[in-house]
Length: 193
Image (cartoon, rainbow, N blue to C red; front, side, top):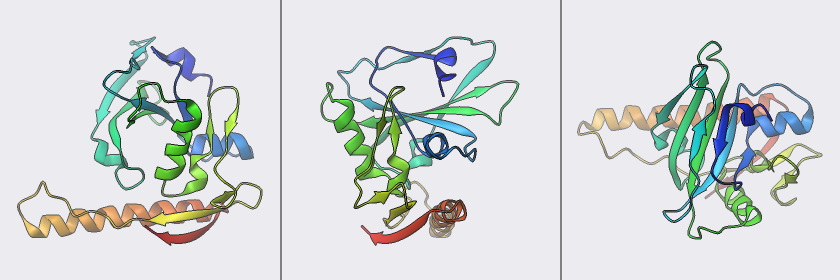
């Protein structure tokens, strides 16, 4: 994951790696095909980024709804893609915070609260791990609470049939994500929120 430092430069040191790439690092597996980097967003915070090598990489700004069923409070999402190897990418996920001076510990607590699969909130700052609470995720046993918040019906479409199609697609993505982690050997326990 230190390759990130050769790709992008931040104006802040407040960011955490989390998600499947961190789980891969922890367990010594290789399921992830991208790296998720979470940054706190506040209007008063200076947390911009700059590509170090624009000839090799390009940036795509994603609709934050891409992450809406995984975590809420997303302000903006950028995908940084290697032009020659598009299968490998970095996702920069900016999360809304109320305090521009939020500590990494408190920012991690926010990730624990927001992730649908709590074990995915295992985070790394480049030096140390930030662990989810044992009562929500047990790394040794590979067990985790799986929060199921109901998918929101879209409001941007005018055709009710389109609304149902979008809703069903979001539901399928959510269940496919749960299945993916269960197939990797994680034991997930449902919790409705």
